[in-house]
Image (cartoon, rainbow, N blue to C red; front, side, top):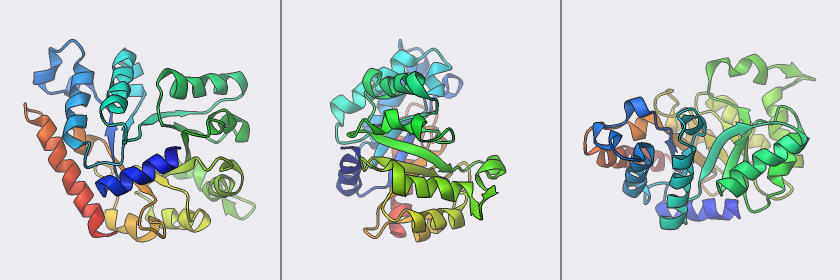
Length: 269
């Protein structure tokens, strides 16, 4: 089950760090650009360098679909499963649709790519989530309060005396978690709101973007976001880790950045 796999990764590596694998061909080091599969080679070296420091990896699907690299996405996920099966993979696609289309998006994430979990957009309601949630062994990570500045244009709207993001959190805690496989995306850039969501969802894990390039405050996030067992967070960094170096030692630089982030997080746990 995804939640159990995530808990074991937290414990084994003493880490709440998720590395976002968002490779842009134009930014890859020269030493991998001449490879047959440059994105996969880039990812592979970062994975090999960081696997003992993380609790998960999160490839963002757009970076593969937008660069005709779906094959390298599948290669990357297969590589993690084959070599580091204890580390869960988050398929970051933010899917959200209804009926048979939602069924196919669930098949894409879990059957085609064999991901351990997937990000989804819940704003069309429960029937957009159910095809994912019914994969009881896999994780479903619903957008709640995102890290981008304009997220409040919709997520902070007040409906019946409650912000929409709080309603999403309440639905996750009371209705959607029937297989104990729901998680929420809650941005590090809004720690006060993250704390409010933690009060609504005391045990649900949060995927937390916004650390690093977006300027989220680690100490503030840890202060209000940890669960009672000092875990409950999957703190993502993408650009700050994968582009920590651009020479032949890029993987080692990524390891150093990952270790620094892990140690900083653990300082406040």
